[in-house]
Image (cartoon, rainbow, N blue to C red; front, side, top):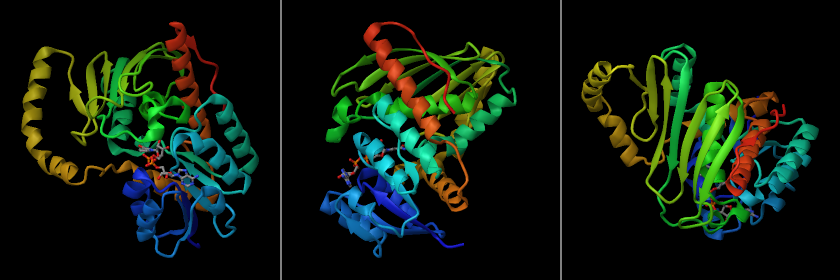
Length: 348
Ligand SMILES: NC(=O)c1ccc[n+]([C@@H]2O[C@H](COP(=O)([O-])OP(=O)(O)OC[C@H]3O[C@@H](n4cnc5c(N)ncnc54)[C@H](O)[C@@H]3O)[C@@H](O)[C@H]2O)c1
């Protein structure tokens, strides 16, 4: 089967550190075109794909006929228009999150996608991280009994925030940047729809850079989460069940940690964990050396390439992207009104 001919739009931070190195080394992919407005970034991107044609705007890249698919890593406020333009030209689309910055645009992307009939995959890559897949499996196998509550944190340090990430209008803020991922993970891991949302949103350093969410799921359980783009680096999820607790701390361990329900069992686990920390030393050294060694990006892109080559539907798709956006919009409404917001049934 011939290689999938891919054009990449937006060769900024994440594309240069992740998407380009991954795509450049996939055997069944040919990077045929790159689009980037910043000439320095475009030059760096060309280093990964010297034969690819280069363009200074994504619209010019889309004029290229000899291309099967696009990977979109543009700033968030350009996602909807770029995805629609690519779909109207019959391309398969891998779109970094979020689907769009508001529901009206998100709905238009869904319509274009339904009309195109091509693969539309969302960059909710954490679904492909082995530690979350393990967590999902352990919950569904009943390891902690029926789960009763979960809490999560996804937070990044202030560093120098990109200009477009500083304002909600251009797609910035903790909800679109970070919460969109955990909202998707909650739906995926618990295999439940989110039916109610309440939220508090604050602007500490930049607009809407901190949010606290409470989600109620269809089975009545609740998930509480903290998101910040102005705090410490952390990504974890803890799930409480009737007979134990499961925890994932993505930056610190490749394993799902299990605690029994009683103090005695918890202390025994703690002892075991201290010993096991030695086993994790190579993992931690590797994380220090390759800070962006997150395995899920590659797995997600491999998944997309296989789906696009076979022209078969795959998840997480644009419906998942739309649902995540609906929950972000409901959280924003809740923060404005102070009310718990009920969500409509998910479209699919
Ligand atoms: N899945 C993840 O975990 C993850 C992680 C980081 C970023 N992202 C997403 O990736 C996307 C890019 O994020 P980033 O941090 O790399 O931002 P970035 O600003 O570094 O990259 C975007 C690039 O697009 C370029 N660009 C702007 N307008 C353009 C146009 N008209 N044509 C061509 N190029 C244009 C910019 O010059 C910039 O280099 C965002 O949607 C973000 O949400 C996802």
